[in-house]
Length: 314
Image (tube, rainbow, N blue to C red; front, side, top):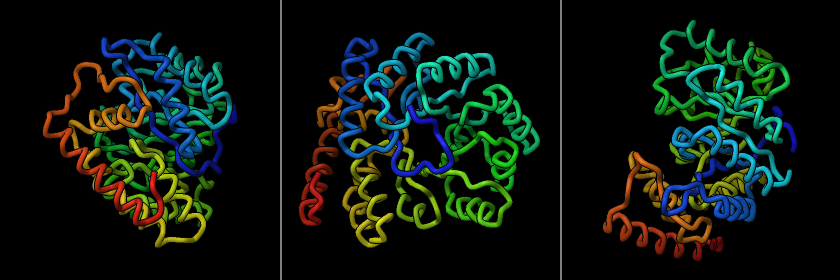
């Protein structure tokens, strides 16, 4: 497996974790899901994230899921594993385990108890010490889930202090100014250049983030070909095409990003697309209503028409 580095770019899909109808881990669907993502152009996968229900898995289930994904990927693309934990001992244990299995790196978010800049900086000094100098890691900046606000100056200080922090998962909102500030810092030589993959609002600002210097996307959507198409068009210089592709998917992407039911929408769509066998979400978790399902069907139908008109049918 390729080790994660500062030159990473493209689309790193945040995967769901498939469960059977009885709530057990569905490893057969895990293989189908990996194939689904790779067939649609994913350049990397990120597992055990927030939308991957990582906190609902036992330690053994987490390792079993990582092992299954890595075996199915078989080195085709990098795999990043979420390693955020309540303490540094479980963070170290999971990191050691998944890196030994062949993961490309790990991702860490700030602990939700952090409040001051000094606390945040001290915490990530301890993260770097816990992971060690040989493990490349991703700094996850997602205040909506962590409650921790990191200013551009704090982010750049973390990146400067931790030589093996090679990527920023940018999810702050509004965050375009922060993205520009971090890119300015590396352009000025204040920090070494890092890969920045955007996931703000599940990709709802992706074209603008690419325009501000993001190297790609790290988020989830039941139609990963949207993010792949947008990133490819942007990289080729066809900015208008990237916006056209994005616009075609936007209504459904927006619907999937609803707080509370977003994961249920995503899993419902992935079942419909044949990627997983069941839309089961472990408790506590949302369930779709009959009206939700009608809404989704209408949005998919209208999306298909827009894509057909655009010549980009999925």
